[in-house]
Length: 140
Ligand SMILES: [Zn+2]
Image 1 (cartoon, rainbow, N blue to C red):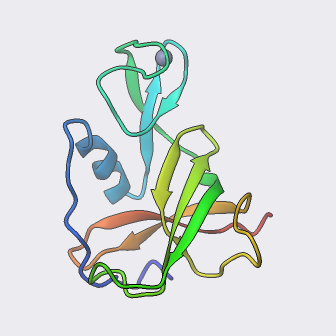
Image 2: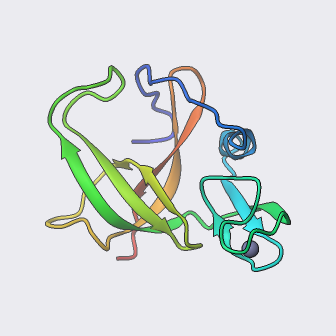
């Protein structure tokens, strides 16, 4: 999927107390995660303190966009209008450490997807919002 394509109507985002800065950065095509100024750990989802050391010294820091697939599934039944079947859901570990759930766009790995290297891209939703998704990396 290219960045110029628009996805069909997607479910509305549910914003938690600490989610707005994350989505603001995504909208600017500049995904950032909270990084602890004390132990340097990145964390996702965002929260009030570092999940590793409980420090309140958290700073929104740009991530590389590189990740590795930890698990994947293909759904063959349509549950939501914006996700016609078949569609995939992947769990990735960002190079910075945190785990995210997303979708793989474009080409799929042959055989198992586990361990495949992927790169972040931003998919445009019908409402003009951007969604962080992944594509297979040229470097495997
Ligand atoms: Zn910390």
